[in-house]
Image 1: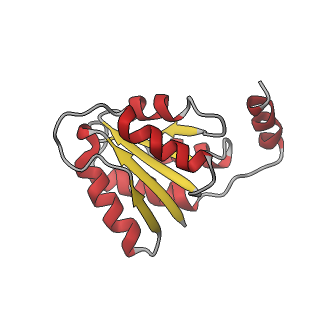
Image 2: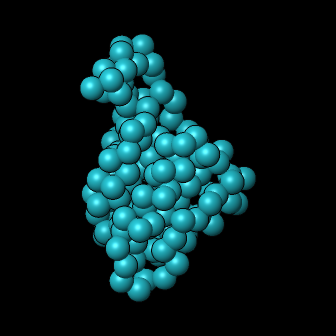
Length: 143
C-alpha cells in the first residue's frame, strides 16, 4: 500500500518508528516531515501529506502530533479526506468499517508506541463495510 506519513515535533518519535515498521511490512511510504523534534507548525507538514492523499497519489495517510486532534483538523479541511483520530483499537476499526477513513491521526502523548502500532496495523487491514455506510459518506461528500 502507498502511505503518506507526516507529523509535527510532538509526533516525530512515533512517526519514525511507525514508518520503519510500515516499510518492513512492504508498504511504500513517503515521509512529508517533520524530520526532528524541533518545534514546528503542524500544518506545514500535515497539509501536504493530506493533499497527496486527496489527489490520489497515496491510498492512505497517517499523521501524528501530541493528541492527534491538530493533525486531523488540518487534514479534514480538504475535500475527499476522512481523517479519524484514533486512541484505541475500537475507534480505529470503526473509522475504517463505518467511515472508510483514508487518514489516521495519532497522538504520541495519548498512547504507548505499542498501542499506536497495533492501531496502525488494524486500521490498515480493516475493510470498509459499505452498505448503509456508503450512503452516509455520499451525503457527507455532497454537503
